[in-house]
Image 1 (spheres, rainbow, N blue to C red):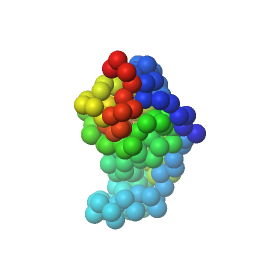
Image 2: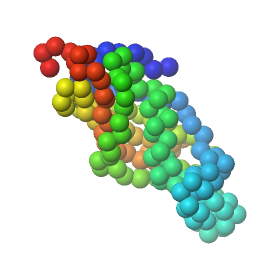
Image 3: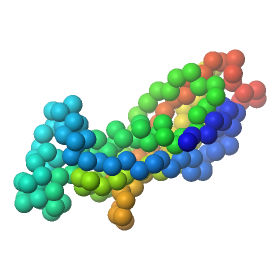
Image 4: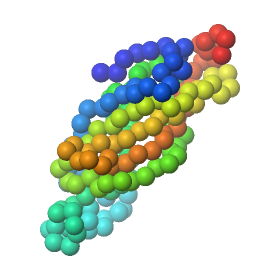
Length: 162
């Protein structure tokens, strides 16, 4: 369960791991739903028999973008809740790399370290997280990235002196 912190505490967490999500099982139903939503029906994702016969994966694998999209659920599951936040904005990613495929049936979880937090304007703080999606019982992560977000808050809630 995420802890609640104040906006004034965020910058003090830079350089620290601030979240480890629960495990999420990536099953064929999830993969097929993502394929339908994105119109990406490549057989390595949607045809277990063919993927087992024609790929080195032994079956289907999740789309890299599916794994990436799970970061939102992982975020809500484990990152601190900022008391003064009125809205969060996904600003994008830097250094995104897909390092290892997520095989169907595997579980993944997110590791989040706060690498930067700086105020931008009167009512915004930009944060950067170094994220890694771990695959259960695998040495290499599914992906690594720097995730940039913006915390929106009422300017009257900005800590003094910053």
